[in-house]
Length: 410
Ligand SMILES: Cc1cc2nc3c(=O)[nH]c(=O)nc-3n(C[C@H](O)[C@H](O)[C@H](O)COP(=O)(O)OP(=O)(O)OC[C@H]3O[C@@H](n4cnc5c(N)ncnc54)[C@H](O)[C@@H]3O)c2cc1C
Image (cartoon, rainbow, N blue to C red; front, top):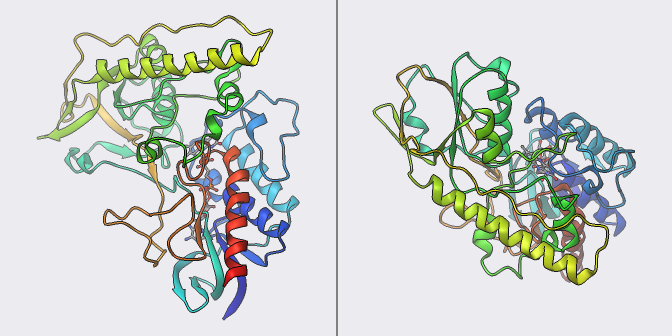
């Protein structure tokens, strides 16, 4: 059996940030990765995807963006390259092509079984991704045979889709990006819209994420928010990274011809049924955006920022009337359904008593109830930005401090 002090599972940016912080504290460790470094950026992203975070936000422990386009947005392959370069630069002790199949508590630590070797470690950090698997609602079973169904991790580009209409379910970052791209390929697109987070790409002349960073909103801590469960389940922001810095919200999609319907509530006898809540969820998203812009304006005034464009307010979301409530999936109108209904972690290999009755992992800012077992990269793990690349540095530093204290105490 191989031995080390700490095993980090997963060599995405979170695992590598953790590795860098452990190395800085001289903690002996290895990073076990089932594929190559940045595996998910190589294998689970569609061809045209660009980060929705500007390049200057691509910060990791000991690394800041060095290119000549700080306000641009990296492609998925550029992101994979950046993470790979970071692994080399930090000399992270990555063992690639090693899948962790189980981790269970044993005396003085954990037994880590992989498809290569067995390890004993005193501490384990899971950095296998908060968005490891696409979520697909149970109503998928009602989809009639003959319709192609895909998740965003399977979708690559419109040319791989059959001709004909496409139903995109979900209007968060993935859904709006894919809906726009598929529509531009000449296919009619229907977008089923549930709760969503409307965002302009720029506000008062600056990227909206610049504002969220400057005001401290992205740094908000998990132990400061009034409703953490809700904060952890919020949909992703409707944002796209593009050279023109364009806003892609429901109004923009409707303008180009995407048909908006409410949340997909059920599929009965092959007929998709949409909720009548489109106007309400859109109004709610408009109100929340208004509140965010109020917060930003108040901050800008207090901070005495000069040289900014004047405050703006955006047109309310235009909802079609009447909105369609049913769509017969057997009619041939829809040939493809894309489930852009979110992502979830896959911690099925963790055999420790850290899950609730619904199978959700319980943790306090990444610290689980199993001493020496930690999580990285989960939604709002310790801060609002925890799932963003920019969130890993602070979380990894905090968890490393906890891990070191725990090692010293045991
Ligand atoms: C579509 C999409 C777009 C996103 N866009 C942005 C963006 O614009 N900006 C931003 O900051 N963030 C973005 N994110 C969020 C986030 O940065 C990514 O999800 C990121 O990939 C998460 O990093 P991670 O290190 O937590 O996990 P991952 O990058 O998923 O890394 C996890 C690693 O663990 C490995 N692994 C999994 N299971 C095992 C196992 N059992 N044994 C060994 N290895 C294992 C995987 O192969 C993988 O390499 C996006 C996410 C998605 C899904």
